[in-house]
Length: 226
Image 1 (cartoon, rainbow, N blue to C red):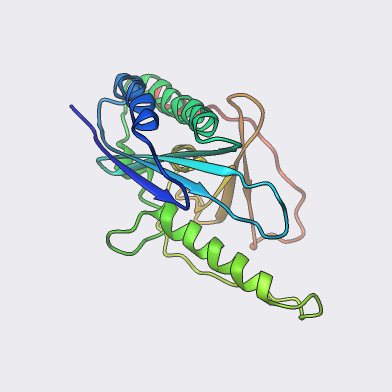
Image 2 (cartoon, rainbow, N blue to C red; image 1 turned 30 degrees about the horizontal axis):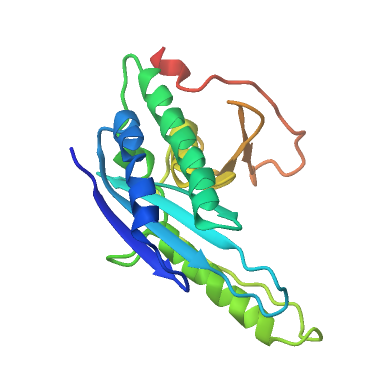
């Protein structure tokens, strides 16, 4: 399958040499993800009036059936930023492929694994929505004076219960360090987070026993399917 590739440039030009350089690497994505349908390459030059340096950011987003995998990096030039982001993207694709290979008996689709992701506006990916919210917050923060009162922004996302394993998958697909979810086995709010190597942690809140001691146990990823 040939991926549809799109380029987005903000405050920077993308010469043919850069496009040719990027195109030489597309085959590696298709080798790791046969379901990849599209790739968006976004190059942004952030102009910071407070500092003389102007970093370039490259964001790579792979779109597939029911999934979005993303990576980004910054560097002094677009080629270096692309290489850094591309390396992160390949690592996430490898992790996804390896986890899928480990599911011997029960295979969970990426669509099911990401079912608990917050809903987004039609035509706008979750990554784009989150980045747009962050950009708006940063812009508003710059306009506020240093003496402004502390503000707390509250957001409520719709969610459906998922397993811990599916929450790990969803976290890896979007490249986050943690992921909030509702544990389908307990109905409790929980958060998975990345530790060293291939290990993960999960924190669960128990409002039914507020005075109980903290409980810990080690479990295996996809243990029930091995």
